[in-house]
Image 1 (tube, helix red, strand yellow):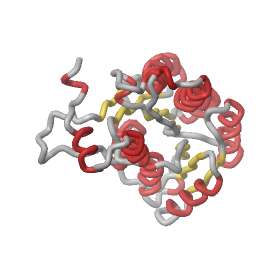
Image 2 (cartoon, one colour):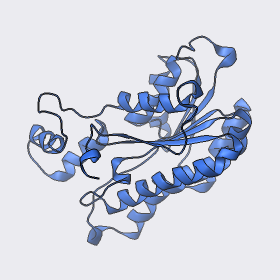
Image 3 (tube, helix red, strand yellow):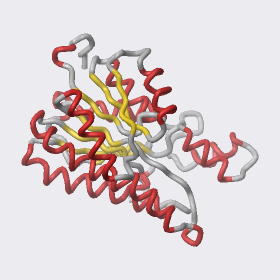
Image 4 (cartoon, helix red, strand yellow):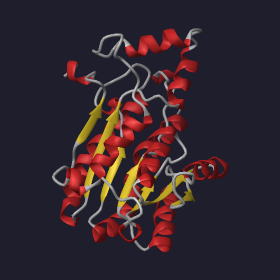
Amino acid sequence: MKRTNQTANEKVVLVTGGTGGIGKAIAAAFLRIGERVYITGRKEKTLEKARNELSQISKRIDMIKGDVSRTADCRNIVNTLINQEKRLDILINCAGICYEKYIEDVSEKDWELMINTNLRGPFFLIKYAVPYLSESKGCVVNVGSTAGVMGFDADSVYCASKGGLTLMTKALAFECARHGIRINIVSPDMVKTDMLDEGFTRSKMDNRAEYDRMKLANYPQSEDDVRFITPEDVAKSVMFLAYNDCSETITGANLIMDFGLTAGRF
């Protein structure tokens, strides 16, 4: 995949959640091959910091402030990009939040924030992007989780949001095929990001190495080979699904990234 300096043929890419570890890695991967990339985020200072970091790779980076949990912001994000670029080729729905709570501790606000961010946001971003993706014969890649295909302790709301995203991806892939749009999802297990750090804090364990070993113990690899997934690993899978020359025949697929974890459960 060599597109560097091919400005005339560059694709316009929208990456939501571009301030997080996975989102930044995905944006960086597109920038490295010469695409025009827009990232979104809720906080302007954090968004500006991410844009400045990514501009060291390429100046073809811009930002749009917005909270994908709000339908009006989803519409505005797409409209702002189209007003500036007049086209959209690739939509990456990466914005997401995760926290672990048992059902007795989950508030209505907790439910609404996670469902609206992880599920409602991608739906409405796709809805508003469909006319433009139809013109470009573009594609969507959603970033899900193994929590979308199996249950985890104290993760019922997160599992509900990612499970919904997984099945919604399949339904919309079938529906949007008539527009020439491909829609897929990548579902990584634990990724080495701030979310993993937050999980350690919530665990109230004293030893981080012990916490990591506990998490990695579920993988089938030997102790010498086991590791966490990196944001760059996720970016590679996203890139594979984003281009027709790699995955023209693939739509409605869930690319699970888990070192075989779920292969031994189903």
